[in-house]
Length: 67
Image (cartoon, rainbow, N blue to C red; front, side, top):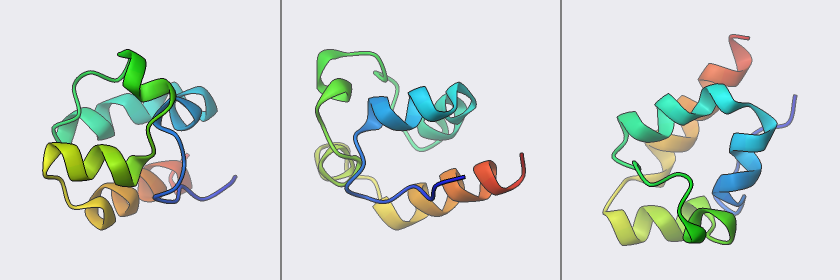
């Protein structure tokens, strides 16, 4: 399975595996299906929401590796 990177679009990660939604929400990203999620990179969304992108990406990849 592909690794999640900060340049990936949020919606693309959700399409890759819907089970990533709780990981995003745990980090404070609750509007996963808003229009911005379809065009905004994880890095950009983290900047807007004041979230550490490295921690989020690490958690997303840990979830995906555990599948």
